[in-house]
Image (cartoon, rainbow, N blue to C red; front, top):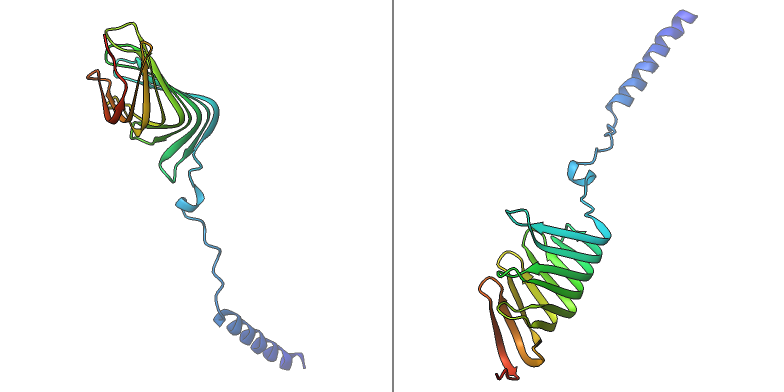
Length: 186
C-alpha cells in the first residue's frame, strides 16, 4: 500500500513545486542609488570665521558670523550677524557689518542686508568714512561694493545721501548713482 501512495505524494509535490515556481516572482527590495543614499546636508556652524587668502598667502578678506549655514541645493551660504574685513588697493583695512548675509558658492559675491555699515580710511587721507545702507553687495574678486538702495556716506563730519552706490576699491573710485544730496566744500 505504501508503494501506491508514494507516486501520489510525488505527483502532489511536483504540482505544488510547479505552481510555486510559475507564480509571480518577488523582486528583492531595490538598493538605494548613490544619489539617494548620499545627500549633501551642507554644513552649519556658530561663531564661524572664513578667511580667503590671495596668491601671496595674505588674507584678502575675513568673514565672521554668529551663525553660518550652507544650503547646497540652493548653491549659497546663509549667515547671521556678519562682519566682513577686507583691504582696499592701497592696503587700508575696511569693515562691513550686517544683520544677515548670503554668499554664492564659487561666485565671490557676499551680499549683506539689515542695517549695513562699511567703515574704513579713504586712501590719501586720515579720515574715517562710514557708508550705510539697508542692503549692500561686495564682489571679492572684482573688489566692487555696490547697492541700488538709499545710501549715506559720512566723511570728515560731512554727509552725503544718494540712491545707489558703486565703489571700485581697485581704482579707488566711488560713484553715487542718483538723487545725491549734500556737499563737500573745502
